[in-house]
Image 1 (cartoon, helix red, strand yellow):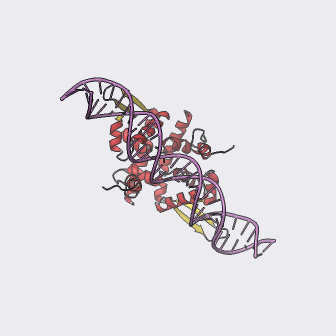
Image 2 (cartoon, rainbow over the protein chains, first blue to last red):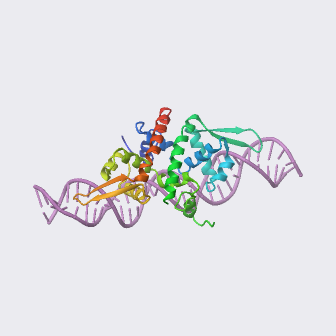
Length: 120
Length: 120
DNA sequence: GTATTAGGTATGAAAAAAGATACTATTGCA
DNA sequence: TGCAATAGTATCTTTTTTCATACCTAATAC
């Protein structure tokens, strides 16, 4: 296959046309960002969760980055966004069924993170 | 705490002085790169694995990036590097105990990746 | 009419990650 | 002598990601 830009090659690796035979690639394409697992971990602990609550918890994430990451997770069917037509507005995010299926993964990863933290 | 550079803030988030109370942050600090889980997934399937084999499997990774990622995983105690004093040289990578504890995580993540792939 | 609120968008600049490329070492073999 | 093979390093450039900042929206209270 022709490879013109790096982005195109990336799409082969972690992108939309990812190798369906490699589940790890599929998974990383969806949740492989810097913040995504942190976001999902926070949402699963209190679901639904508001935008502002996420901001507070992920102290150092930027407003615009937070929006971007949430949009991607929504696009990929991992969480849903619900807007309440109030003023001031309220927006809640919660896991979809697919998102909930990530909970065992997050559990396992957290357990490992504790192990890893011990020897840090 | 004073925050001068982005790097310093990052170190608060995902870095060496990460919040030990947040296992997810610990975990992502170690295995959160773009290639790391792909590398580990490949190594766990055939352990030990040679440098050149990794290159072939992760078709699009650069030689120097592969080296860098492997060095970090070694530094973080997730895999060990064994050099065989032959010519041409042979270098094998294998999971440490800590690395092996990642196997359930990778299993869970792959299962999820399959689910996710279905609706892609 | 303007301040407040929560959430969002848009822009350009900065930083981090990854890439391309060229170089090294080793030694048996033609 | 020169080349092949494997693994690695060093340097510079490009790509991607994230940040900083400013601006937008809506209903309500003042």
